[in-house]
Amino acid sequence: MPRLNVIILTQESGDLTVALWADVPAARQQFYANPNAKSAWVGATTTDNTNLQNGSVVEQVTTQRVPAGAGIGQIENFLQNLWQNYQNSINTANPWLHYGSTWDGTTWVLVTVA
Image 1 (cartoon, rainbow, N blue to C red):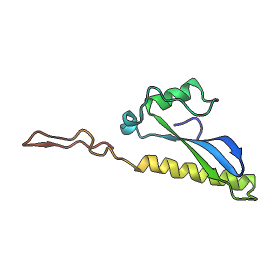
Image 2 (image 1 turned 120 degrees about the horizontal axis):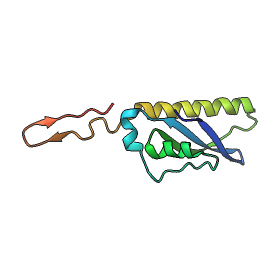
Image 3 (image 1 turned 45 degrees about the vertical axis):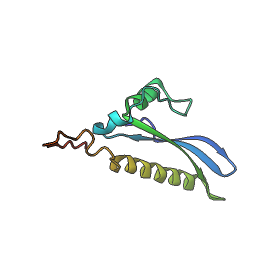
Image 4 (image 1 turned 135 degrees about the vertical axis):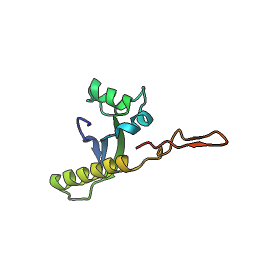
């Protein structure tokens, strides 16, 4: 699990730039692994960056418009929903479902990546 879910990076002219951290299902971590990964947040710990590098956590940086007059509670709720949608997309999107399946001209060996 990521140590944090939402990190506000900048806020200007009604736009919030945030980093979202999501947990990656174990069977798909190899596809998210990147030995050069480093969080956009300068406050990320060595462990945070290691988790991004080994693929157990994935980061998305996005900029969102904050509705004029929104209070901090509304902004917090909006960002929590934004994170939940991101986590749900990581959990459900699986373009590697049959990654590594092979056919040798006679027989298929079908692999399923959960």
